[in-house]
Image 1 (tube, helix red, strand yellow):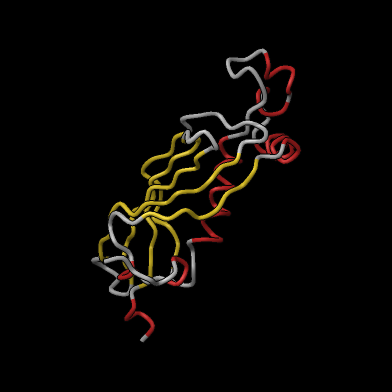
Image 2 (image 1 turned 60 degrees about the horizontal axis):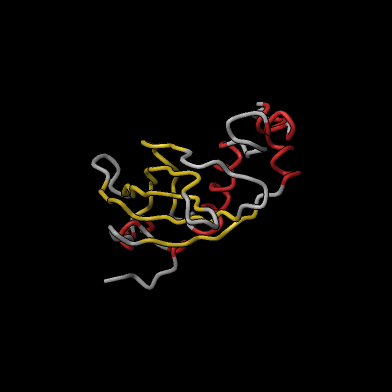
Length: 156
């Protein structure tokens, strides 16, 4: 049975393995890509269109960390409500396809697993797959992570 509780309002018990959500989209803007890469990832294929044209990418591509930051923003806006207590980490991080100017990336999140904490009775772990998918249905970024989510009885 699928929960009718909005994603941001869910407690641990409201998540079911196999559920998936589309949590928003973002368009890649050249000026933003260049600004991010200039500050945080100044590789030639991220900051110089002419130099990028001479690489295996054939043109400017976004930093994977920029794509990850946008994924985090969409996750925060659409998934992380008051019951989220943080993250335990990522077990997977990959950038299967490059991200280019004008790409529209959509975040899809799927619930892979849930388990109660053995040491903290007020929380559970929700393992989720997050993918930033471009307009051609190609996965540009994929992560598998574990979120700490409060249980319903933790507010007592």
